[in-house]
Amino acid sequence: MLLATAIVLTVLVILLAIPVTLTYRLNWQLKLQSEFGLQWLFGLVRVRLAPQRAAHSIPETRETVNPIEAKVKPAGKKYRPFTALRDKSFRRRMLQFVRDAWRALHKRDLRLRVRVGLGDPAETGQLWALFGPLSGLLASIEDVSIELEPEFVDAVFELDSSGKISVIPLQLLYLGLGLLCSPSFWRGMNGMRQPA
Picture 1 (cartoon, rainbow, N blue to C red):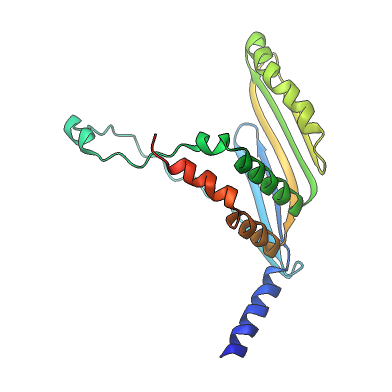
Picture 2 (spheres, helix red, strand yellow):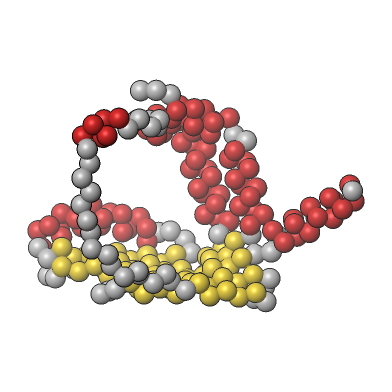
């Protein structure tokens, strides 16, 4: 029994150590077009993920809500995420997790191009005042080509992105377990659950 468990665990670890590769292409001009594909076992297993087709539109019907029923609904637990974000050790641990997870992704030919215009040059200028500095910051990210372009004449939103991302599931599992074993993570989670 012990030998069988050890064999199953060894096989599971070996399977989780094999990279999974996601290839994608997103294009949104007039409508969203997307292609996704997964590869595993060094290309021996290939799966093409077809985008879901939109269901036939059903005319919306307004539901009348009885004011008494609306008052009777019990209020759910209130979570306060900003409480956790105020904790310096929680913030530091989450940033470290995001950095490590970003490094664990092996990115090839990853590019993102966004073109935005609001139809009014003044409003587009105000939007670009926010996103212009962000554009310079995003352009400095390694392994990714990111372009944000303003369109001052027409109202437009265009998105074009493609790339190949490989990840070793065992590595992500290791990072996730490290996060779950971190006391600062649980302190932050407990702080979110405290009543206002």
